[in-house]
Figure 1: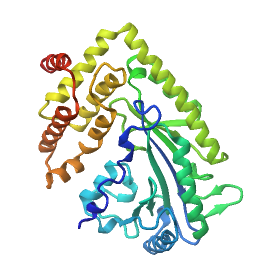
Figure 2 (figure 1 turned 180 degrees about the horizontal axis):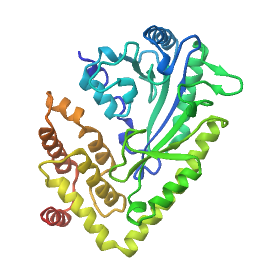
Figure 3 (figure 1 turned 120 degrees about the vertical axis):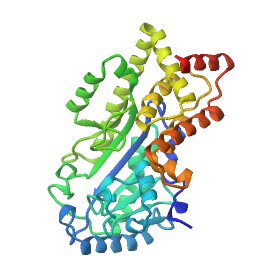
Figure 4 (figure 1 turned 90 degrees about the vertical axis):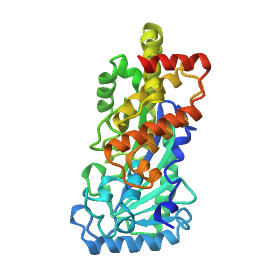
Length: 373
């Protein structure tokens, strides 16, 4: 058995599109950063610090109701492709994997619970990063899951805590609660109505920030934005969770209004954009991942506006994950050069749309027209 056999479904629960506003909010993630007393953390941590932290975590997970009987993967023992799959599923960060082309540092690991949708990265930027990833807008629920595990671990591990500043972390912006809550949103309405700049400025004024698919340092593609809190000091976890939920609901309302404006003032142009995107996905023979994301944006908008019948949000979510390079290589059973990867991506999308995109006969004709345009 390979290490991939132990994690075939990990990190895929959010694909189900079952949460609130799942057509706009793809997923909610809440994570906390914790460090252990007596060990250097951040850039100052050495191999002996990391290995000691991992040993302490292993002892604590055996006594945790949430973590026992779960799956622990130590990064140096994991094949490169599996590590990249974990990253593509947003279960681990680039910091945990280390420099590109280099082996992960000793003492780095990730643990997946078999009971809850929660995982723990060990010796990433901080000693422990506990995170939960759920479908749709479910900030409070994700926080409750993380909070339960935090309490369990806190009974077993000596967390680094300052009476004035709170939990101590490697990055000063995480000091305090150590909490980072984020929602991954699709906002084509605000982009197409040219209201997105105003919306993003408003987020900054309210203490939130935005990033791309893989978080900090990643670019926004396909009108998909990851919105999260910027700082944690001076506010409780409950305050941060409530604030994010409130602001995101305002953004959702703005996005829904923008979509109605598109239908009212530019219906023909909007329908053409949606069907062209569907046609290209349905018949393309080569697709880069960036091309796919941009086309998925149009198709996802069409599904949400009920202009594209027969497609499920789940299907579109699945495309986002399984068309990434490492997932394509896992399916092919070998490494894929860029050109082959693009061809395999297009083939996967065509196959999914042929089997799961059950459009009507009349609409199929419209899709053919879009593909030929």
